[in-house]
Length: 185
Image (cartoon, rainbow, N blue to C red; front, side, top):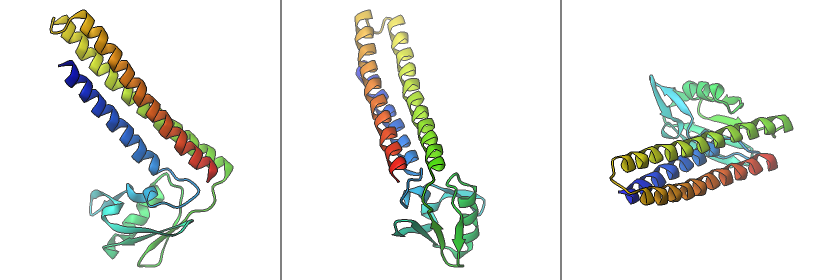
């Protein structure tokens, strides 16, 4: 019972770290990457659809992303989604493809991006702590219902704390890696 609870907590915490890493991959650094626009949601015939399902995304040069829509009619919707995003990029479209030129990041823009990285890592830390709190509540409930002993509760709580510490470390490491990427550019 306790093992299942801890295994579930580990899976959920791992999920929170994965979400953070996906989130951070969409934050711009100095070089172009398809991940910047991969998860961008486009209003396609009234349905929010990830860009990667609507277009081929390539990076022919370090400072250029080329988006080639499968359906030429979606060009303007993709363009609007890019302009509305927090990327701060201006799309240029020739009727067939959209080109995103990534200008070199200014020091000020790098600082803004680092703040965004910090905000996202803090959200991930909060998510991990919320999972810990939820599992701890379950453990307290088990102890109160006499389903586990006080010793088992304390052992499980310590294991849960170690697990939480491990995932908080992973979150911090992911945030630091992304911060370095942004500052190097």
